[in-house]
Structure formats: structure tokens, C-alpha cells
Amino acid sequence: MKTLNSKKFSRLIAFVGLSLTLIIPQLAYSQTIEEEPSALAMAGDLVIARPLLITATVAGALLYVVSLPLSLAGGNAAEAGDTLVVGPAKAAFMRCLGCTRSGYKKEIANLDE
Image 1 (tube, helix red, strand yellow):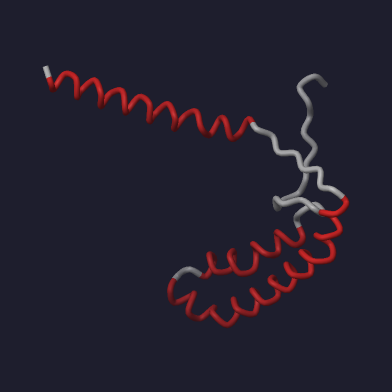
Image 2: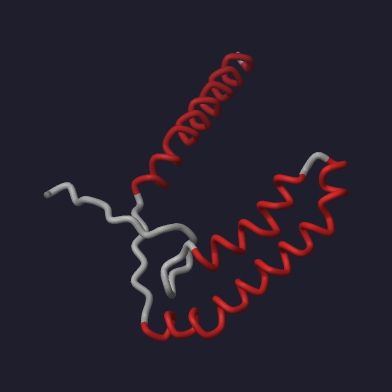
């Protein structure tokens, strides 16, 4: 009798795990993120964040060039470039003023259109 209960319990755990695996990405996809930054956030981004991010991009590019021989020997030159150069560059140049997420802001059509 004990093996029957443990078998049912393991099936239940597998079912719940599979259900969560299938449901969680759908929940993340269904939530739209709309950023409408305030004037203060835009001003702070323009005066403080963007110059720091541009400086981080230039410094990351210099560090990438210096570390390139070691990165090539280790086989992770692409990851080093993404982390040191591409990440700060996306945050500096591919982000709306005052927004917190990198990437271009795209218009999304409403369902009632």
C-alpha cells in the first residue's frame, strides 16, 4: 500500500512540475511592460546615467582589447565582448530616455483595433 501512495505522490509532483513549466512562460509573455518615465527620470538619465554608460562602454572596449588574447585562449571572446561592450552599449544607446529596459520601444497594436 505504501508504494501505491508514493507512486501517486511522485506522479502528482511530476504533474505539478510540468504544469508550472508550461504555465510560467505564458504568464511572463502575457504581461506587457509599458514604461512612461517622468520628466525627472528623463533628466536624471540624460545627465547622470547616459554619460556613465557611455564611459562604461569605452572602458569595457578597452578592457576587452586588453583581455582579448586571454579570452581567445579560453574560448570565451564572444561572451567577454557581450558583457564588456555590447551590454553597456545597449543600455546607453538602445533605450528610451528615462526607461529602465534596454531595447527599442515598439508600438504594439491593441486587440480592439
